[in-house]
Length: 394
Image (tube, rainbow, N blue to C red; front, side, top):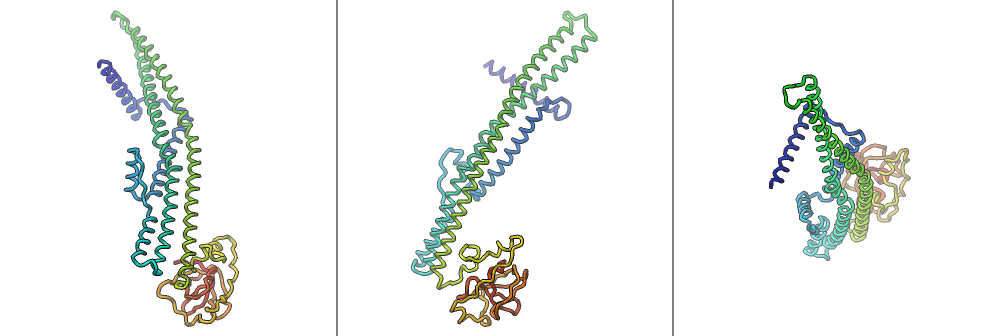
């Protein structure tokens, strides 16, 4: 018990001495031992790595799980070392709702059968999202978390120990300085009335202070070397995080490729299933979904020195040529859009509308119309316009 009390008293004394030294340094009343430039650079690099890794980690968590309540729940499961329960993704839940609604509306109806189809693809999207979340959590989030909760805690502990060793060293330096000053002062005016000359006592005190300084310097140098080795390991951390970042990007790319493929398949299936009811439901997206072979307005407009696309073939659809009369076409109640003209266009006949680059027109489609063409209106003028010459705005 005496040993514990003595140790506690000793630790309290050391803590108080360090606190006094630290305070005097902040007030500019005591000298401070500076670390070498290389170690200072390593510390600054480590702090930068920790701060940005923490920000990237937190934001990646938000990206993968936007629901804060779910993130808190996952945090508690991890701290309790329990398996996180599997959650239904929003897309999977939406798909299930659609299929349940189809049962109520009747799976044989057009709306019901479409709900079943879309619901199935929503579930596929949800499955792809689940796989992406799982892969990203293992290959990207876990290494970042291991660094913050493992390696960085070790580095921080050794840095605190180095700071304590530095404070002890500076305390010993200050103590030796005071002992030397007192010894010099006593040597100048000795007190011969003392049984034991004061300068002899002060000389012994200075010798003890020098010994303490040598011990403190040795411990400081040893701890500085340990800290330096740990901080140099940050380079290996960067290499590891770089590999994890590549894996995260690959998982993200694979996820978006899967989503794009599912949506293309869904568009094709809906287009073939509902073509009679909605013949031009996906005509507007033809240039960007890969269905149309014509050039994309956005891709041609953004390339430096891009020339205007070739004139699309004039529609030869028998239904359109026989029944579609421009003067009789009426704009739909909904579905009209604004479009910006990318290139000048000269009308080939009276059914087409000439265009000037950069002007804004209103466009829409009508049943039975070729998907490479739209109806364009500019004031009182109206006529067919090629999709590849336009950039749809809204």
